[in-house]
Length: 128
Image (cartoon, rainbow, N blue to C red; front, side, top):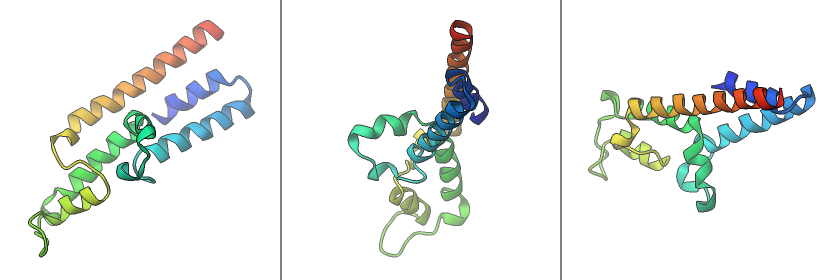
């Protein structure tokens, strides 16, 4: 994912300074919008498109759901009837349902990678 993103930034910005600047801002945007720095519930409603379009969000959901729905997090909290893992997922704004299936997230990450590769090829063909 990072390699194709930086290849696209290098194709768009022909100069090394422009490409490095664009790549830094693109990496910052993917990281911030992925849900790790700012949780889904804390983002503004008008900025949700960035959250859903960030490929890092899908990978992070798979990792978080795989960890917190595991056997070691199945203890029920004393003041709730939900498990500790589900409470942690909900507190950070993650989904604890079948949306977070590994297949869906894997296809989403690969799809965004293909879209960036197509944009890179288009940029090289028409502006190359």
